[in-house]
Length: 141
Ligand SMILES: O=C(O)CCC(=O)C(=O)O
Ligand SMILES: [Fe+2]
Image 1 (cartoon, helix red, strand yellow):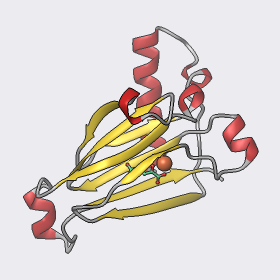
Image 2 (cartoon, rainbow, N blue to C red):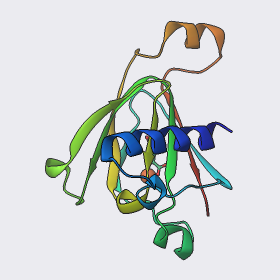
Image 3 (cartoon, protein in one colour):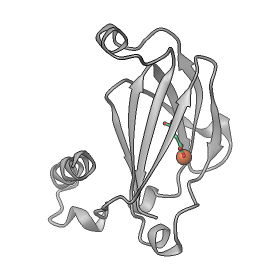
Image 4 (cartoon, rainbow, N blue to C red):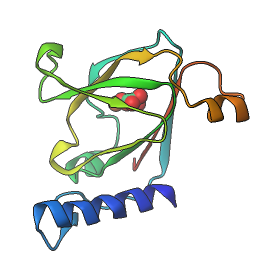
């Protein structure tokens, strides 16, 4: 499945970059049983928050959230506090997969803006995706 593949790819990357033999100690594996679907219109946003609705075991183990972005790109903020001014920003584009788990499972994150009209033409032409951004997050409850 796509989620397991994404985690495997992350493990390979962690192994290489962090020079460790057991990347699972940094990013635990996860088999999802839950998917949250968010659709953002061109003016949609989501304030800085932590994802804490999963079970105590899932949160304590740092089981990752695996997030897929489809459609318009979005600014994504993340940081150690709820303070927007201290947050870092990355642009998530259509097709990007973002994973946060292990020591980053409780990261504050949010979507301050959607970049209107940036979805790939091939996507909007071939699908009936309305203007905006679709985000799927797979998790283990
Ligand atoms: O849309 C995103 O990239 C983030 C979604 C999110 O944080 C959530 O569903 O909890
Ligand atoms: Fe979230």
